[in-house]
Length: 273
Length: 158
Image 1: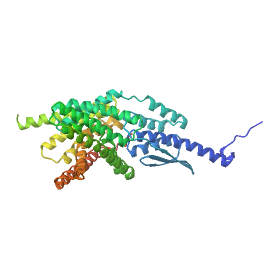
Image 2: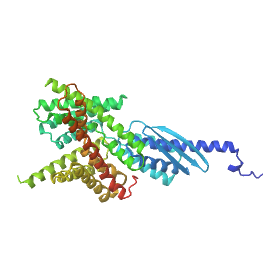
Image 3: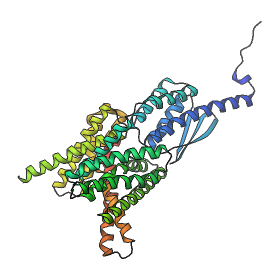
């Protein structure tokens, strides 16, 4: 007996549309997963949109539309006349260069080779898990050294170098600990600025530095959000003023809270010295 | 020490600590080992160019623009195989020029204006406003300096 081949046209059209919706939903969710990770790694919006587009097309979508906000991303993917729109929330914006690069390469490769949505989600989890990171102590030491170098650039004398190095390192360890405990980003900035500024300022004063004010300020420069500040400009230049403005406001807020911490450290030092 | 020798020592000093600061922030941003070397080169170049321009009595903003442009051009044009990493390396090289200290000075000045019994409020207002304007213009200079080579070479970040 010859069994006729079943084509898409023979299947119940309602079931067919539902199956296509389900497929598109998985594509949208997978692409948004990558976009969320890219934003949390510090990529600018143009790159995030391109990453989402590459992944969605690589997974089989024929059309892709992306809307990026500061705290969420939405994507509409479609095949023929059927489309779905999905949204995902974005977590705290940080900077992770190596993961960012891995994700960009991954998106490019996926566009070339194709893949499945389920496989992509698993690959993304694996990339996040396996991308190497420097040890927290090494990062703290490097951050302290960067703050001390900043101090020298600002005209701080050598007596202030070691205290600022220590203050920057302690500030970085404190920042990591507070963020891991779920502390609000802005409140963290005020606390770390006070802590690092006090250590740097007092340390420089005790060691006889003539530039303890610079030491106090330099100790807190680990908090200056240089990458978001530059991303804000680039986003606006590339035609995404909404996210760019939001980034700029977040940068200003961080600086206001950090300055409040510096002010408290300075006031305490002025009162007690 | 002759003025030229003093200027060279100053440029060397700023380049050295610019490199150290860039590498430090590169570690914080989780750059790999190879890219950290490029961060050091970009940071040293940016600070050397800026210090040199300042020695010729350029404004801070103009000097910063040329410095960011130089660092970004070096990374984007001379080291094209860096590919997607190029923008981030150039940015890390310019991080030591981000005027965080000016921003702090401006805000501390504005805080001081609101305290009771403030003395010479006009002078505080002028100096704080000046510092804030320098922040805005210097950040703009860094952004513009970084953007020009990126867009001129059509680097889309992938």
